[in-house]
Image 1: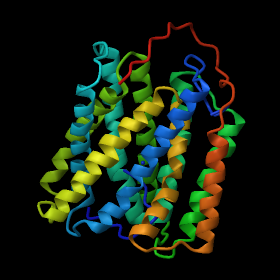
Image 2: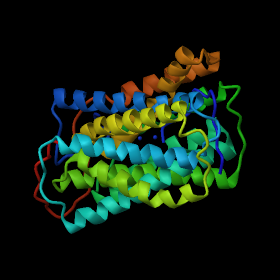
Image 3: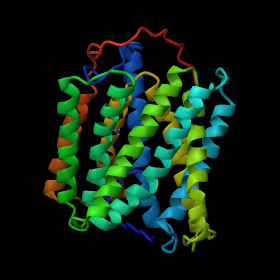
Amino acid sequence: MVTRVRHSPIIASTTPAGTACHDARMPASGPRHATSVAAVTAAAVLFATTGTARSLGPDGADAWTVGTWRILVGALALWAVAGSSPKPGRVNPASRRVLLLGSIGVAAYQPGFFIATDRCGVALGTLIALGSGPVFTVAGEAITRGSRPGRRWWFGTFAMIAGVALLGAGDDSAGVTLDGWGALAGLGAGAGYALYAVATRRAIDAGVGSTRALAWQFTLGAVILSPGLLIASSDGLSDVDGILMITHLGVLTVGLAYFLYGVGLRHLAPATAVSITVIEPVAATAIAAIVLDERPSTLGWIGALVVIAGFSLLTRRDGPSRQAPRAPRTPTPTPSA
């Protein structure tokens, strides 16, 4: 599939406080919570450079090829960071199974997102993928941890999703097409994002370093996607522009971005972390305005303000979330990397 999304400020990455679903077993102090929110927000800003980087890269490369090389280079960058960090305990068989499931989520998000934006248009495809991610994450958290988000999480998250919808509606170049397969791919992307967010947090709780957990998932995800390289186009990737694009996408939008995302996941519930990254289209719009000289419409600016308002509500710190009754578990220390 040749998917090319050019000059679209709303494009997301190959991208979800307070009563907003904190983990009662590992409460975050005020400074720690603020640091975690800042880390995930910085990751979302890095994710937001993906669309602009692709717009400035070669035209001939297939999205599958770009995505596969992106997560492979990103995995190498994550391993470089993990290798310089204190070694956590050995990965036990249960954690290996969790990380394998997470890698399937990594592999599902990449093509799912681009298929959705190709068949439904950038605005609707992005909205489906980003909007469904937090909902799938809440479902995963409820099943695996028995946690439920409070009203503030719901209000903040849905305000951000509504803002993304307005932002997309204000993008005249985005285009909207209601396509069943595209919508299904977008939902698959959201489910994949949720899967590796929940898997990463489960691995952290089991004593695996956040960076190492993400490195394993992205490595296995690249292996899962690699057979597609045999048929997908790689035109232009060996040129200077192609090498620079893949380096940027791999090192910055995966290596550095997911290192920061992992830092946030050490003290934020996955549902909160996934929802915070919904701010990404606003950052992408700002980057496109600066780099590509694209300006959103008035409706787009209103959408951006709604996203920011939802973000502010979502990231306010309060007490821990309510937990459904579960068998007692002995908390494990959170590793440093």
